[in-house]
Length: 114
Length: 116
Image 1 (cartoon, rainbow over the protein chains, first blue to last red):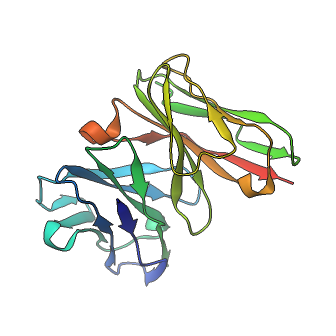
Image 2 (tube, rainbow over the protein chains, first blue to last red; image 1 turned 90 degrees about the vertical axis):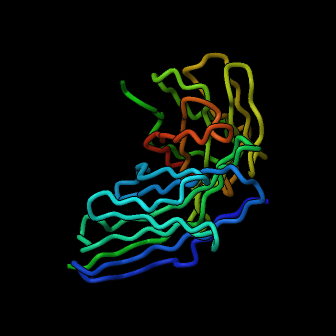
């Protein structure tokens, strides 16, 4: 069975601090895809990144970076020098080649305090 | 492109009433899906469709029906609303069936439903 665990329910940081959001996944498939989405207070879901299981290179996009480690089944998301606008709920998701279904974690609420 | 659109944005129903949540996309996407979002539970898949005329159940399908007569539209029907269906509903689409190719899903703005 596929599963995504985001153990951190809520994180609060002070502006300019770095913060890492954890995502641990479970799947027996060798081909799978991982995603991160952001849900700001306005409620829409914004796509951030997609990664396939064959590409373990870390990725950096501005203040955002992602660390994919197959050995620990983790796909963690780090925000460097956090800003108030980063306050949102962040979701990690998994889909595998054997299904048409995307599995979402329960989300991590990030509060960045000024 | 308007992307994925959903109507209405907000709806109040009484227990036992039926209604249809509308979802449309103008990106010629094959794959469409419906999720519900409840506090502390993330997004749970209700139904999905891999193309016109093809639908299947997700994780929480009970109480909901779908059909896909065109590529663009994927309505979600509540047959007899219950308070347990109070939730925020999101429609999403991707170019092709996601599991096969890991396509990115793009989400509509959501419909907030309150069942009294």
